[in-house]
Length: 77
Image (tube, rainbow, N blue to C red; front, top):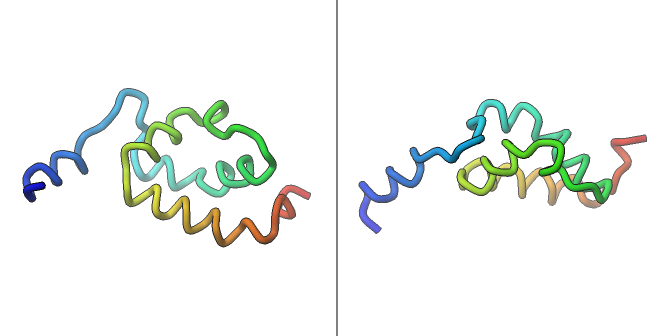
């Protein structure tokens, strides 16, 4: 993959994608829903779209989810 192609992939946006700032703002709530066994994409479809399109935000999501998983849904109580 050329640098130009990689840059185009990073800059592309999907319909309904709210962008990094909006996705990161609710990422903790999104993860709480996942830990509770709910489908966060049903509540936050734009964030789900963004996580599919943005490798950086997906990495943040995955790291936070891994860090929170040992606590289960304790944050919801």
